[in-house]
Image (tube, rainbow, N blue to C red; front, side):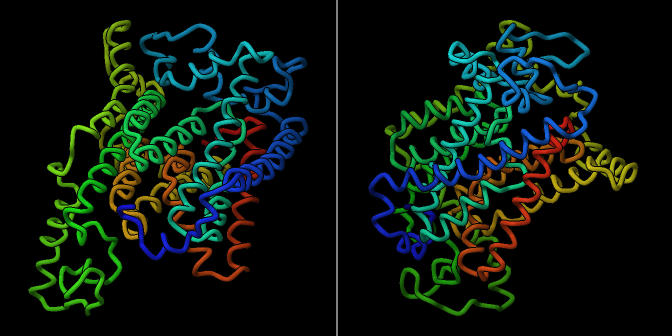
Length: 445
């Protein structure tokens, strides 16, 4: 597989690619962590003081187990399923939300006592799918221990409550993202394109997935033509462009001439890695993945007269492009105004999550290839640059799954058991605290 460290590929034994255990192990891990998250969230929803926007209802539709996951944007999805899309100029409107997730809820709502319960079911089943597919993706690139650790890193991530029941599109989106990438790696181009269609109809960052699928196809197609350009950078001849054979260890030149030539060599290597001349007509169905966004903009144009209405309506959520957004003026104002509040703490964690994910892009490239690095860069740059205060970067990081695989591999391969337990333990505590506060109505993401 192109762009994957050969050492990691060899460390995955054959038995992980066969039998039911490859599916049941991640599924059981998800159910175990999810049971704890559900219990803690339920207790919090029933006992903690509620935000005034979410008073404790006497007889919630679908029961308290569904009601505890209905917070903030969940109300918009319920409205879309019930009444369809609307647009009211000058105020927040449902056209800001992409259609794939509410359509999925509407498709199964008949089987549940209410829309909230249907939304919880779609999210939880999608989260289960995320666990299974992410573990499968990791098993193809690293040892069993590293794959299991990577999955745990994802499952106890502080913002992972969106995988367990929150009526938000994140779990549905990430499940479709993983399915699209796994399908394209197996050269099921039509299926990958169709699943990619769903992805780009799920949220604005879906465009990163469509681009990422194309990058994976390009990188794989160029593997045979330019093998040294598609090897991960590991300090070998493949990295430096010198030596007598593929992967032959050579010292890294340090002369001024060589240092000046590095950008040109890197640009040439990337050009060979993603040379479009290697493509054939057989892979063109992958381009169907862009169709979800095209269909959504076409609908907005036909009904409301503005194909980019979902972008323009962001101003009603106090977002929007410009220097104030890019420089995060609102972020620093919020931190300075209420520095010790839960909201300010959440903003700082979002900022750390988004910025660190982008800083890890080169490491993702070395471990998993530049196609996945490009995907991570785009899928995180959109929320990091497009929000005024980094808000929601933490849950958007769920889609940057190679980052979790990278951290999991690092914990499994380079840290002691005590270090791994400490990382996972702190993350799990934050997950339970955040899910409790969210159940009480606090705006955290």
